[in-house]
Amino acid sequence: MKKIKELKVEELPPGRILGIESSCDETAAAVVENGRIVLSSLVASQVELHAQFGGVFPEVASRQHIRTIYTIVSETLKRAHVDLGEIDAIAVTRGPGLPGSLVVGLNTAKGLVLGSGLPIIGVNHLEAHVYSAWVDLATTDPANLSPEPSFPLLALIVSGGHTELVLMRGHLQYERLGATLDDAAGEAFDKVARLIGLSYPGGPSIEKASESGNPRAFHFPRAWLEDTWNFSFSGLKTAVLREVRRMQEQTLPLPIADLAASFQQAVVDVLVVKTLKAAEAMEAHEILVAGGVSANRALRQAFLAQEAFPVHIPPLSLCTDNAAMIAAAGYFRYAYGHRDGLDMDVLPNWPLYEV
Ligand code: KG4
Ligand code: ZN
Picture 1 (spheres, rainbow, N blue to C red):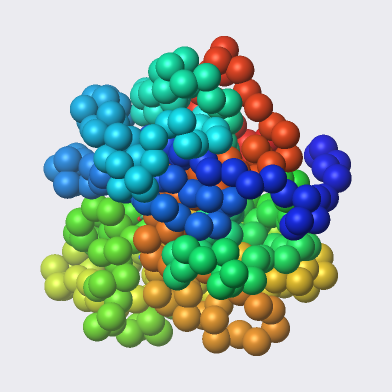
Picture 2: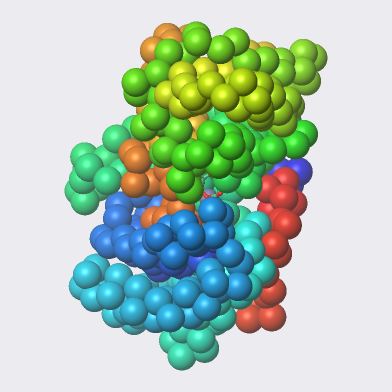
Protein backbone atom coordinates (compact mmCIF):
# COMPACT_ATOMS: atom_id res chain seq x y z
CA MET A 1 0.00 0.00 0.00
CA LYS A 2 1.27 3.47 -0.94
CA LYS A 3 1.81 5.90 1.89
CA ILE A 4 0.14 9.17 1.02
CA LYS A 5 0.82 12.40 2.90
CA GLU A 6 -2.50 13.44 4.35
CA LEU A 7 -3.58 16.96 3.34
CA LYS A 8 -5.39 19.25 5.76
CA VAL A 9 -8.88 20.27 4.64
CA GLU A 10 -7.64 23.79 3.91
CA GLU A 11 -4.87 22.36 1.70
CA LEU A 12 -7.33 20.61 -0.61
CA PRO A 13 -7.79 22.52 -3.88
CA PRO A 14 -11.30 23.34 -5.07
CA GLY A 15 -12.52 21.00 -7.81
CA ARG A 16 -15.68 20.60 -9.83
CA ILE A 17 -15.71 17.09 -11.24
CA LEU A 18 -17.82 15.45 -13.92
CA GLY A 19 -18.23 11.78 -12.98
CA ILE A 20 -19.23 9.03 -15.40
CA GLU A 21 -20.28 5.51 -14.38
CA SER A 22 -21.12 2.55 -16.62
CA SER A 23 -19.57 -0.47 -14.92
CA CYS A 24 -22.67 -2.67 -14.81
CA ASP A 25 -26.30 -1.93 -15.68
CA GLU A 26 -26.61 1.71 -14.72
CA THR A 27 -25.58 4.57 -17.00
CA ALA A 28 -24.86 7.55 -14.79
CA ALA A 29 -23.30 11.01 -14.77
CA ALA A 30 -22.94 13.65 -12.07
CA VAL A 31 -21.31 16.99 -11.37
CA VAL A 32 -19.90 17.24 -7.84
CA GLU A 33 -17.95 20.04 -6.15
CA ASN A 34 -15.07 19.34 -3.76
CA GLY A 35 -16.16 15.71 -3.44
CA ARG A 36 -19.19 16.70 -1.39
CA ILE A 37 -21.74 18.98 -3.07
CA VAL A 38 -23.88 17.56 -5.86
CA LEU A 39 -24.85 20.02 -8.60
CA SER A 40 -26.61 17.30 -10.57
CA SER A 41 -26.72 13.51 -10.70
CA LEU A 42 -28.58 11.31 -13.16
CA VAL A 43 -28.89 7.52 -13.29
CA ALA A 44 -30.48 5.62 -16.18
CA SER A 45 -31.26 2.15 -14.84
CA GLN A 46 -31.41 -0.86 -17.14
CA VAL A 47 -33.11 -3.02 -14.53
CA GLU A 48 -36.30 -3.56 -16.54
CA LEU A 49 -34.31 -4.53 -19.60
CA HIS A 50 -32.43 -7.27 -17.72
CA ALA A 51 -35.33 -8.51 -15.58
CA GLN A 52 -36.41 -10.85 -18.41
CA PHE A 53 -32.99 -12.57 -18.19
CA GLY A 54 -33.04 -12.80 -14.38
CA GLY A 55 -29.70 -10.97 -14.20
CA VAL A 56 -27.46 -8.58 -16.10
CA PHE A 57 -26.89 -9.67 -19.71
CA PRO A 58 -23.47 -8.13 -20.52
CA GLU A 59 -23.97 -7.69 -24.27
CA VAL A 60 -27.36 -6.05 -23.76
CA ALA A 61 -25.88 -3.81 -21.04
CA SER A 62 -23.10 -2.38 -23.18
CA ARG A 63 -25.43 -1.72 -26.12
CA GLN A 64 -27.84 0.10 -23.82
CA HIS A 65 -24.99 2.20 -22.34
CA ILE A 66 -24.10 3.29 -25.89
CA ARG A 67 -27.69 4.34 -26.54
CA THR A 68 -28.02 6.33 -23.30
CA ILE A 69 -24.68 7.75 -22.27
CA TYR A 70 -24.48 10.83 -24.44
CA THR A 71 -27.94 12.03 -23.37
CA ILE A 72 -27.19 11.34 -19.70
CA VAL A 73 -23.91 13.27 -19.75
CA SER A 74 -25.26 16.27 -21.64
CA GLU A 75 -28.45 16.41 -19.55
CA THR A 76 -26.36 16.21 -16.34
CA LEU A 77 -24.22 19.18 -17.41
CA LYS A 78 -27.34 21.09 -18.41
CA ARG A 79 -29.03 20.48 -15.05
CA ALA A 80 -25.87 21.55 -13.22
CA HIS A 81 -25.90 24.76 -15.31
CA VAL A 82 -22.29 24.26 -16.30
CA ASP A 83 -20.45 23.50 -19.53
CA LEU A 84 -17.22 21.58 -19.87
CA GLY A 85 -15.24 24.83 -19.63
CA GLU A 86 -16.41 25.14 -16.02
CA ILE A 87 -15.35 21.59 -15.06
CA ASP A 88 -11.88 20.87 -13.56
CA ALA A 89 -11.57 17.17 -14.39
CA ILE A 90 -13.49 14.17 -15.69
CA ALA A 91 -13.59 11.08 -13.45
CA VAL A 92 -14.68 7.79 -14.94
CA THR A 93 -15.06 4.26 -13.62
CA ARG A 94 -12.15 2.20 -14.89
CA GLY A 95 -13.05 -1.04 -13.08
CA PRO A 96 -13.98 -3.45 -11.67
CA GLY A 97 -17.01 -4.23 -13.80
CA LEU A 98 -18.21 -5.69 -17.09
CA PRO A 99 -15.54 -5.02 -19.76
CA GLY A 100 -17.98 -4.02 -22.52
CA SER A 101 -19.87 -1.69 -20.19
CA LEU A 102 -16.73 -0.07 -18.75
CA VAL A 103 -15.40 0.63 -22.25
CA VAL A 104 -18.47 2.71 -23.12
CA GLY A 105 -17.99 5.05 -20.14
CA LEU A 106 -14.23 5.27 -20.54
CA ASN A 107 -14.41 6.03 -24.26
CA THR A 108 -17.08 8.66 -23.67
CA ALA A 109 -14.82 10.30 -21.07
CA LYS A 110 -11.85 10.13 -23.43
CA GLY A 111 -13.88 11.78 -26.18
CA LEU A 112 -14.84 14.62 -23.85
CA VAL A 113 -11.23 14.99 -22.72
CA LEU A 114 -9.94 15.10 -26.31
CA GLY A 115 -12.38 17.87 -27.11
CA SER A 116 -11.89 19.89 -23.93
CA GLY A 117 -8.29 19.27 -22.83
CA LEU A 118 -9.49 18.47 -19.29
CA PRO A 119 -7.60 16.00 -17.09
CA ILE A 120 -9.02 12.47 -16.95
CA ILE A 121 -9.02 10.39 -13.78
CA GLY A 122 -9.78 6.66 -13.68
CA VAL A 123 -11.68 5.67 -10.54
CA ASN A 124 -12.05 2.29 -8.89
CA HIS A 125 -15.75 1.49 -8.53
CA LEU A 126 -15.27 0.11 -5.00
CA GLU A 127 -13.43 3.20 -3.80
CA ALA A 128 -16.28 5.22 -5.28
CA HIS A 129 -18.78 3.29 -3.16
CA VAL A 130 -16.66 4.24 -0.11
CA TYR A 131 -16.55 7.90 -1.16
CA SER A 132 -20.34 8.02 -1.46
CA ALA A 133 -20.14 8.66 2.30
CA TRP A 134 -18.50 12.05 1.62
CA VAL A 135 -21.36 13.20 -0.60
CA ASP A 136 -23.89 15.38 1.21
CA LEU A 137 -27.22 15.53 -0.59
CA ALA A 138 -28.78 17.76 2.07
CA THR A 139 -27.11 21.04 1.15
CA THR A 140 -25.30 22.96 -1.57
CA ASP A 141 -23.92 25.41 0.98
CA PRO A 142 -20.27 24.62 1.86
CA ALA A 143 -20.81 26.19 5.31
CA ASN A 144 -23.56 23.71 6.17
CA LEU A 145 -21.95 20.43 5.17
CA SER A 146 -22.27 17.46 7.53
CA PRO A 147 -19.05 16.28 9.21
CA GLU A 148 -16.87 14.09 6.98
CA PRO A 149 -16.05 10.51 7.91
CA SER A 150 -12.85 10.54 9.98
CA PHE A 151 -9.87 8.19 9.80
CA PRO A 152 -9.01 5.50 10.69
CA LEU A 153 -12.27 4.10 9.44
CA LEU A 154 -13.50 0.62 8.81
CA ALA A 155 -15.40 0.28 5.54
CA LEU A 156 -17.75 -2.57 4.74
CA ILE A 157 -18.35 -2.66 0.99
CA VAL A 158 -21.33 -4.85 0.13
CA SER A 159 -22.42 -4.91 -3.50
CA GLY A 160 -23.48 -7.31 -6.22
CA GLY A 161 -19.90 -8.28 -6.99
CA HIS A 162 -18.01 -7.61 -3.75
CA THR A 163 -18.09 -8.02 0.00
CA GLU A 164 -14.98 -6.52 1.55
CA LEU A 165 -13.77 -5.22 4.87
CA VAL A 166 -11.31 -2.41 4.34
CA LEU A 167 -9.33 -0.30 6.79
CA MET A 168 -8.65 3.27 5.66
CA ARG A 169 -6.02 5.20 7.63
CA GLY A 170 -6.28 8.18 5.30
CA HIS A 171 -7.61 9.29 1.93
CA LEU A 172 -7.07 6.81 -0.92
CA GLN A 173 -5.36 4.27 1.38
CA TYR A 174 -7.03 0.90 1.46
CA GLU A 175 -5.89 -2.00 3.62
CA ARG A 176 -7.70 -5.22 2.88
CA LEU A 177 -8.77 -7.05 6.01
CA GLY A 178 -11.04 -9.63 4.44
CA ALA A 179 -13.46 -10.41 1.66
CA THR A 180 -15.95 -13.02 0.63
CA LEU A 181 -14.47 -16.38 -0.25
CA ASP A 182 -17.36 -17.21 -2.60
CA ASP A 183 -20.57 -15.27 -3.29
CA ALA A 184 -20.80 -11.53 -2.65
CA ALA A 185 -23.61 -10.50 -0.29
CA GLY A 186 -25.63 -8.93 -3.12
CA GLU A 187 -25.03 -11.98 -5.29
CA ALA A 188 -26.40 -14.17 -2.46
CA PHE A 189 -29.52 -11.97 -2.29
CA ASP A 190 -29.95 -12.25 -6.07
CA LYS A 191 -29.43 -16.05 -6.15
CA VAL A 192 -31.67 -16.79 -3.16
CA ALA A 193 -34.39 -14.54 -4.60
CA ARG A 194 -34.35 -16.63 -7.78
CA LEU A 195 -34.44 -19.84 -5.70
CA ILE A 196 -37.61 -18.80 -3.92
CA GLY A 197 -39.24 -17.36 -7.03
CA LEU A 198 -38.72 -13.63 -6.42
CA SER A 199 -37.88 -11.21 -9.20
CA TYR A 200 -34.56 -9.63 -10.13
CA PRO A 201 -32.85 -7.70 -8.58
CA GLY A 202 -33.06 -9.97 -5.58
CA GLY A 203 -32.03 -7.56 -2.83
CA PRO A 204 -35.07 -5.27 -2.98
CA SER A 205 -37.39 -8.28 -3.61
CA ILE A 206 -36.12 -10.15 -0.55
CA GLU A 207 -36.31 -7.01 1.56
CA LYS A 208 -39.93 -6.50 0.51
CA ALA A 209 -40.93 -10.14 1.05
CA SER A 210 -39.19 -10.11 4.48
CA GLU A 211 -41.50 -7.40 5.77
CA SER A 212 -44.25 -9.95 6.38
CA GLY A 213 -41.90 -12.80 7.35
CA ASN A 214 -40.46 -14.15 10.58
CA PRO A 215 -36.64 -13.86 10.65
CA ARG A 216 -36.51 -16.74 13.16
CA ALA A 217 -38.73 -19.15 11.21
CA PHE A 218 -35.67 -20.98 9.81
CA HIS A 219 -32.30 -21.12 11.45
CA PHE A 220 -29.95 -20.81 8.49
CA PRO A 221 -26.20 -21.20 9.09
CA ARG A 222 -23.92 -18.22 9.73
CA ALA A 223 -20.36 -18.73 8.47
CA TRP A 224 -18.33 -16.91 11.11
CA LEU A 225 -14.91 -17.94 9.75
CA GLU A 226 -13.36 -17.17 13.13
CA ASP A 227 -9.83 -15.69 13.21
CA THR A 228 -10.26 -14.15 9.77
CA TRP A 229 -12.14 -11.12 8.46
CA ASN A 230 -13.42 -13.14 5.51
CA PHE A 231 -17.01 -13.96 4.66
CA SER A 232 -18.76 -16.87 2.98
CA PHE A 233 -22.35 -16.93 1.78
CA SER A 234 -22.47 -20.04 -0.42
CA GLY A 235 -23.29 -22.38 2.51
CA LEU A 236 -26.20 -20.16 3.43
CA LYS A 237 -27.45 -20.20 -0.15
CA THR A 238 -27.18 -24.02 -0.21
CA ALA A 239 -29.08 -24.27 3.09
CA VAL A 240 -31.95 -22.25 1.58
CA LEU A 241 -31.86 -24.44 -1.53
CA ARG A 242 -32.03 -27.61 0.61
CA GLU A 243 -35.00 -26.26 2.54
CA VAL A 244 -36.79 -25.27 -0.70
CA ARG A 245 -36.18 -28.73 -2.23
CA ARG A 246 -37.39 -30.48 0.92
CA MET A 247 -40.65 -28.54 0.88
CA GLN A 248 -41.10 -28.99 -2.86
CA GLU A 249 -40.62 -32.77 -2.52
CA GLN A 250 -43.31 -32.80 0.12
CA THR A 251 -45.45 -30.54 -2.13
CA LEU A 252 -45.67 -28.00 0.67
CA PRO A 253 -46.30 -24.36 -0.29
CA LEU A 254 -43.12 -22.26 0.04
CA PRO A 255 -43.30 -19.85 2.99
CA ILE A 256 -41.60 -17.20 0.88
CA ALA A 257 -41.77 -14.37 3.40
CA ASP A 258 -40.29 -16.53 6.20
CA LEU A 259 -37.56 -17.91 3.93
CA ALA A 260 -36.68 -14.38 2.77
CA ALA A 261 -36.69 -12.92 6.30
CA SER A 262 -34.63 -15.78 7.77
CA PHE A 263 -32.09 -15.58 4.96
CA GLN A 264 -31.83 -11.80 5.26
CA GLN A 265 -31.34 -12.05 9.02
CA ALA A 266 -28.47 -14.52 8.57
CA VAL A 267 -26.69 -12.16 6.15
CA VAL A 268 -27.26 -9.13 8.37
CA ASP A 269 -26.01 -10.92 11.51
CA VAL A 270 -22.72 -11.92 9.92
CA LEU A 271 -22.08 -8.56 8.25
CA VAL A 272 -22.79 -6.54 11.38
CA VAL A 273 -21.02 -8.73 13.93
CA LYS A 274 -17.85 -9.13 11.86
CA THR A 275 -17.69 -5.45 10.95
CA LEU A 276 -18.05 -4.37 14.58
CA LYS A 277 -15.38 -6.84 15.69
CA ALA A 278 -13.01 -5.64 12.99
CA ALA A 279 -13.62 -1.99 13.88
CA GLU A 280 -12.80 -2.76 17.50
CA ALA A 281 -9.69 -4.79 16.66
CA MET A 282 -8.39 -2.07 14.30
CA GLU A 283 -9.26 0.74 16.73
CA ALA A 284 -11.26 2.47 14.02
CA HIS A 285 -12.98 5.78 14.79
CA GLU A 286 -15.95 5.09 12.60
CA ILE A 287 -17.66 2.51 10.44
CA LEU A 288 -18.71 3.19 6.88
CA VAL A 289 -21.12 0.89 5.04
CA ALA A 290 -21.47 1.24 1.27
CA GLY A 291 -22.57 -0.55 -1.91
CA GLY A 292 -25.94 -1.75 -3.17
CA VAL A 293 -26.66 -4.04 -0.19
CA SER A 294 -26.27 -1.09 2.20
CA ALA A 295 -29.69 0.00 0.88
CA ASN A 296 -31.13 -2.93 2.87
CA ARG A 297 -33.30 -1.62 5.69
CA ALA A 298 -32.61 -4.50 8.11
CA LEU A 299 -28.86 -4.02 7.64
CA ARG A 300 -29.09 -0.24 8.10
CA GLN A 301 -31.21 -0.62 11.21
CA ALA A 302 -28.82 -3.16 12.73
CA PHE A 303 -25.83 -0.85 12.21
CA LEU A 304 -27.67 2.21 13.45
CA ALA A 305 -28.98 0.37 16.52
CA GLN A 306 -25.51 -0.35 17.93
CA GLU A 307 -23.76 2.32 19.96
CA ALA A 308 -20.14 1.21 19.87
CA PHE A 309 -19.20 3.16 16.72
CA PRO A 310 -20.52 6.09 14.72
CA VAL A 311 -21.74 4.71 11.38
CA HIS A 312 -21.96 6.39 7.98
CA ILE A 313 -24.43 4.80 5.59
CA PRO A 314 -25.23 6.79 2.46
CA PRO A 315 -28.83 7.71 1.63
CA LEU A 316 -30.55 5.09 -0.55
CA SER A 317 -29.92 6.88 -3.86
CA LEU A 318 -26.17 6.78 -3.20
CA CYS A 319 -26.05 3.10 -2.11
CA THR A 320 -26.67 1.58 -5.52
CA ASP A 321 -24.58 2.55 -8.52
CA ASN A 322 -24.46 6.26 -9.33
CA ALA A 323 -21.96 8.78 -10.67
CA ALA A 324 -21.95 11.22 -7.74
CA MET A 325 -19.77 8.69 -5.92
CA ILE A 326 -17.44 8.45 -8.94
CA ALA A 327 -17.08 12.24 -9.02
CA ALA A 328 -16.49 12.30 -5.24
CA ALA A 329 -13.72 9.68 -5.40
CA GLY A 330 -12.41 11.40 -8.54
CA TYR A 331 -12.23 14.68 -6.63
CA PHE A 332 -10.02 13.22 -3.88
CA ARG A 333 -7.76 11.66 -6.49
CA TYR A 334 -7.65 15.02 -8.29
CA ALA A 335 -6.91 16.84 -5.02
CA TYR A 336 -4.02 14.46 -4.30
CA GLY A 337 -2.51 15.09 -7.74
CA HIS A 338 -3.56 11.88 -9.46
CA ARG A 339 -3.90 12.15 -13.29
CA ASP A 340 -4.28 9.44 -15.92
CA GLY A 341 -3.36 9.41 -19.60
CA LEU A 342 -5.53 8.86 -22.63
CA ASP A 343 -3.85 5.47 -23.04
CA MET A 344 -5.64 4.27 -19.87
CA ASP A 345 -7.61 1.07 -20.45
CA VAL A 346 -10.44 -0.54 -18.47
CA LEU A 347 -9.50 -2.91 -15.62
CA PRO A 348 -12.46 -5.32 -15.27
CA ASN A 349 -10.89 -7.11 -12.26
CA TRP A 350 -9.16 -4.15 -10.62
CA PRO A 351 -8.70 -4.85 -6.88
CA LEU A 352 -9.13 -1.89 -4.56
CA TYR A 353 -5.73 -2.55 -3.05
CA GLU A 354 -3.85 -1.89 -6.28
CA VAL A 355 -5.31 1.56 -6.65
O1 KG4 B 1 -23.53 -1.53 -5.77
P1 KG4 B 1 -24.52 -2.12 -6.71
O2 KG4 B 1 -25.64 -1.23 -7.22
O3 KG4 B 1 -23.83 -2.73 -7.97
C1 KG4 B 1 -22.58 -3.37 -7.87
O4 KG4 B 1 -21.57 -2.66 -7.81
O5 KG4 B 1 -22.62 -4.62 -7.78
O6 KG4 B 1 -25.14 -3.39 -5.96
C2 KG4 B 1 -26.11 -4.20 -6.56
C3 KG4 B 1 -26.47 -5.29 -5.58
C4 KG4 B 1 -27.42 -6.33 -6.14
O7 KG4 B 1 -26.92 -7.61 -5.84
C5 KG4 B 1 -28.72 -6.04 -5.41
O8 KG4 B 1 -29.52 -7.20 -5.24
C6 KG4 B 1 -28.22 -5.51 -4.10
O9 KG4 B 1 -27.11 -4.72 -4.41
N1 KG4 B 1 -29.23 -4.69 -3.43
C7 KG4 B 1 -29.79 -5.01 -2.25
C8 KG4 B 1 -30.77 -4.02 -1.98
N2 KG4 B 1 -30.78 -3.14 -3.02
C9 KG4 B 1 -29.82 -3.56 -3.89
N3 KG4 B 1 -29.56 -6.04 -1.40
C10 KG4 B 1 -30.30 -6.11 -0.28
N4 KG4 B 1 -31.27 -5.22 0.02
C11 KG4 B 1 -31.55 -4.16 -0.78
N5 KG4 B 1 -32.50 -3.30 -0.48
ZN1 ZN C 1 -21.59 -0.81 -7.33
